[in-house]
Image (cartoon, rainbow, N blue to C red):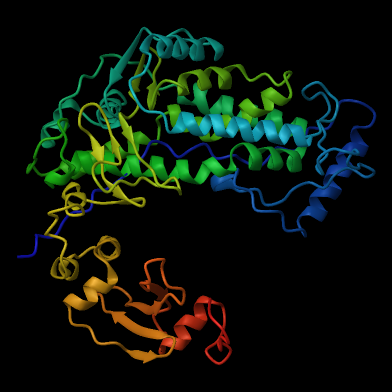
Length: 488
């Protein structure tokens, strides 16, 4: 008998990784050349509007729409990188900054280091973490927090933060039967002073010293490749927090979450999810801390005190919520498993797990129920063709098909080929509520060492009508152009 439909656990993460806003234009200097400088910048603005700028991954919601042109007469220096950067009048150190090839290597090395920070697991050195948190407050010109309160998972910490911020009342938690310690009188939230403000200031200072093109180059080398995988990872955690608060599905219950049938649990879940966007990223801020760490290695005069202290915190903790008198801190995960594309992935257990049992199961980045991965190994008899057909979630159904095997599924449902010729066999798998999966079955023209011939399944567009058309499509050809003389 087919298993009952599974609820796909939801997911969500604290505030999105910092969006890098457009580089502010330098202010005109207070000297006789001010008028000339202003005229030059106005001219650059007019000309830039007609020039499409390169894609900028640093800008987030406010993507760069244009990049200023270099000043007349500026040329790359021999033996250096192709981008010459300049500082604004009165900027860091004054003289123009040039990113050499060696600097680009340093930026990439910094990105490697911070990639390890993002993926770090295991309990924090709480003493070092708390010293770093207090140092962030001091660097921002604030009094140290009176207390640092620790939680074993972002779920527990987010619930506490929702109560501390007044988003949820302790009585609201009765709907979910959540139980977390919430400190009294935390004071006002101070994310703006500890995170948003310092980020913007450091971005503006670096952008002014490097120029827009130089900043874009630094970002590409130091942060770009970390940004999207980390954004996806944190978003998955955020959604898992949301599901963990509101779930009744046993696959997403944890020791922190109990079965709940009381109305209103999803209202509380929505409020807790909203709170995650005000969290500081901790280790997940490594995606943007990398570029500032790299720039400081290249140019020691670049000094961003609050950002540097945030980096020390990131080496020890997960998400954290700063208030005037209290800091709420989540431990890092105990387990984090990802595939070669940095997607959460594990076929035998949770891909992400925390000390209190809060966990997320995923297959190639796709959240799946906990009992789903149990059907992948020996004895996983529930993963059948019938179970695949009955699965209401289209994305999960595609994952099930991939794991079960297209050839096995076709045999079990008694499918008939759409077309057959010397190039292969064309098959179609109809899925309710989704476009059909069309595959071409082909044989490897080179036998294996034992003499056997391997079969491959090639996914092709759903409107493919013949096997030849499908095989030709995989080579970027039309069916009439695909006429191999010899196959190897």
